[in-house]
Length: 229
Ligand SMILES: C[S@@+](CC[C@H](N)C(=O)[O-])C[C@H]1O[C@@H](n2cnc3c(N)ncnc32)[C@H](O)[C@@H]1O
Image (tube, rainbow, N blue to C red; front, side):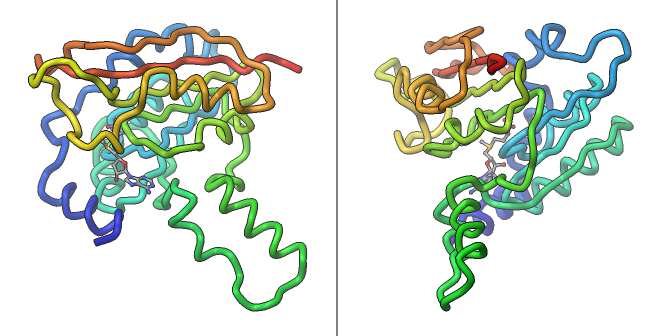
């Protein structure tokens, strides 16, 4: 079963309907990120946005927000939620994994320019998206993507990431059992450091947190700012 079919089925069965609150990491820092003094709305991108809890929160805080997810069922839920809250979000249904985009590579001989464009989109699944003041990626592991995302930040733009952390803590930790869906300590920063863009680290955390539900999770959080130049 491919990713889209599996996630569509999960959302249709009600996945995450008990988790409507925005990410605590995002909520805690929204004042430092949000638009100030009625300036033009800043652009925000929520990758693997799921049912839109964070996309809607960003839109409600003045960001011109786009949410991207592979699951059309998740996006339908997000769109209904945005309508309910009374905000606008641009939704895009596509994969963020380079392998899933491999079919974009032409098999027949084609003009060199077309081939290069296809290869670019394989390396960067959002190559046609432009730049943002804020990009968030929460709880979806896409190896190598963070390096690419640094090119999609405007200077002074922010990248915030939160992933489940590989751990040898106790059994009570919630989240995926497979280490493939968790990141090793330091892995997020290593991906950012592979970018050619200058940056500084605003926050880098790895450890146990208590979720708003009361569950205990092990997470890796990284917040970096792209520097000018
Ligand atoms: C654990 S959920 C996290 C959702 C959201 N970021 C949040 O924090 O509520 C993981 C999300 O990744 C999406 N996803 C899975 N595979 C994907 C892919 N290849 N490309 C884009 N999104 C994908 C799923 O549909 C799901 O919404």
